[in-house]
Image 1: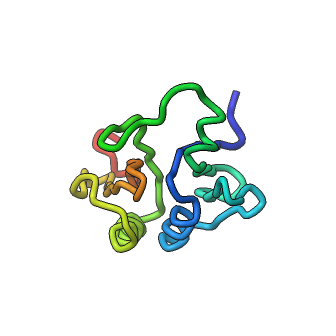
Image 2: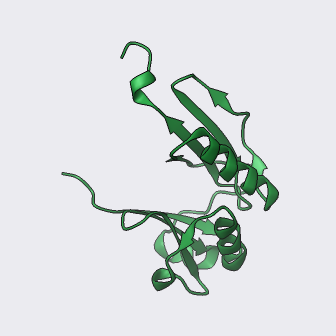
Image 3: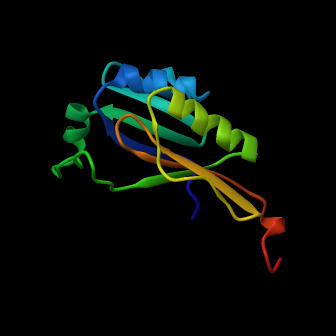
Length: 136
């Protein structure tokens, strides 16, 4: 079995602020699935989406509490096409309200840089060239 689409759902305090943040990073909003309660960020057209749901709306989908500030429940890794794209997205995140998660890591065949978005969700931006992986 293989999934044909992935939707990641994350709670946010301010939907419009989140929408603005992700468009500043260069991502597209799927307006069909966006309103005042949610914004749908397209990570890969027709395949991968992140649904940022206003906290009160998010709570209608689960009876578990939302993680509080200074906690972490998920780190999302996004593969990009080059080291330059990785740094461009992270630098844009830092300029638009995000904060550095950890320093960039360069393994030769794989490079990653990461940030916390304004709601504290962790994002690892990664570029990998498996043909350069040691032992290949």
